[in-house]
Image (cartoon, rainbow, N blue to C red; front, side, top):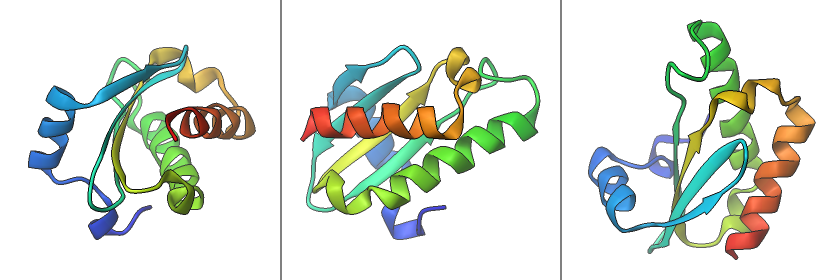
Length: 106
């Protein structure tokens, strides 16, 4: 889990949804924009999995990957919007996909 100061506030989140750039993947969309500091957010909706335990598992995995790659992100705000087929990925596959997206936005 990211520290509270590394997570987006509600106002920053809505601002990013309106003004951010988008990067699409078969498993997620990544919204990002340059900022004064690095902050991340995540959306895992009920369409991903009906059970909260599965959604929480995906959320924990993604936050762990963000935590490992926080320094390489640079000074940006980013939000990852998940898609339903993300549950089919293993942790290593998910990590590879997210790291590939991070390299693309640099």
